[in-house]
Image 1 (cartoon, one colour):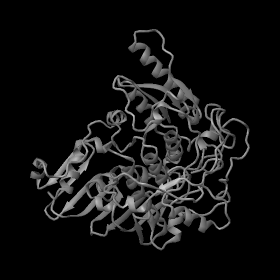
Image 2 (cartoon, rainbow, N blue to C red; image 1 turned 180 degrees about the horizontal axis):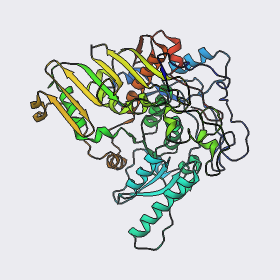
Image 3 (cartoon, one colour; image 1 turned 90 degrees about the vertical axis):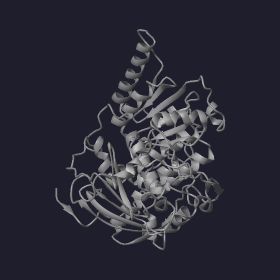
Image 4 (cartoon, helix red, strand yellow; image 1 turned 60 degrees about the horizontal axis):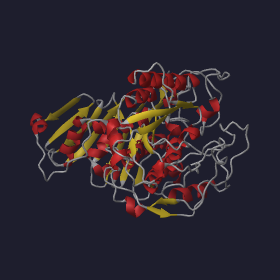
Length: 514
């Protein structure tokens, strides 16, 4: 398929944009899509008076590590209004939208400050059992301090296969012929409503991350959520706010922070061993084009309404309901976001001004001209912070895969499995006690479990996930608009650009709402 320099239409109002009302519409009673919630859940409503983030408190963010302090705002969470631009402006000025109201359950996990007893296993539920999610199930179930008790996926075969694997493993470990103790669900609300689940691991597609995270957090669960944090900046702010208001542990799945090579590169950059860092280069895999696919009836194996969830309604086809959703803008922003967040996170970890100081952002990209895919194939985005540090973020045909910090005394490049530097002596540097030592973790999943017990922030806290995700999203917006933008971390908005600010949020299909 041929690619064009002209981007696809930017996100704008649609016929269903005002579909999120103050009450859920009536449906078929299934609890899926347009129907009411399961019997254990109250009907989804939009709430006023939610607490939102304080820009003043959040100005302390450095590399996405500082806690966020909530304030109150009376802006409704969801508005049905003809003055769409004014509604969006009120939403964005609040810094984080009030979140969707999920049924609150009384859980022993609701005591945010309480520590999990050292001899108590951590009960885990899993939402999203595709390739990544099934890998998480397999790993976590082998940890003696955790117990997998529930799995959730709209595909019946995937959740039943995961349930069978979990119960088979525990039966063999106990020396028994049979073990029953892992439930499976199509609807995540049933999983998060369970009192006995302490934490939830989320590996669903990006467009579901906000709703799955918010549902778990508001039900008193700690959360491990795969990257990217959310589909939009506004959703990410809502998740950050909810984590801090509810005192939950939240680990984002940017697991490179638990690889010592990445930590060493960032510590060299932050502590002046490269001299003054002036440039950071990031390269990640480019996007993919997809052919068209004919619509068809969903197979019996999938609850298609639950698969679509908050995304616009489109007919089922085999191609999109697989790995390929990554390259369809309704579900993800593409590799610029979903792969980019890994190495952009390392860039901000080593050069924190990228996520704390005002930025100028400009970029260009190529996009597919036909087929299902409509996210960028190639791109070049430049971010310049107020202190002069510049991030150059491209597909890996332009910059090598990984993250490279360049200073006036040397450089260091890091990727999965490699660490190089010039001069090479930089790799022998031993940090001094007075140097800044970053959070050390050698296992991302175990770091999450440890923090559930200690109630400390993990190595990849929600703020780091938010700022890394936001950097990729504002870069994508710059490529779609084709002009230089100014980004303000204090307000979490573009400066004097309503068109760009409208792209920081998206509507959701009723009855889903953030």
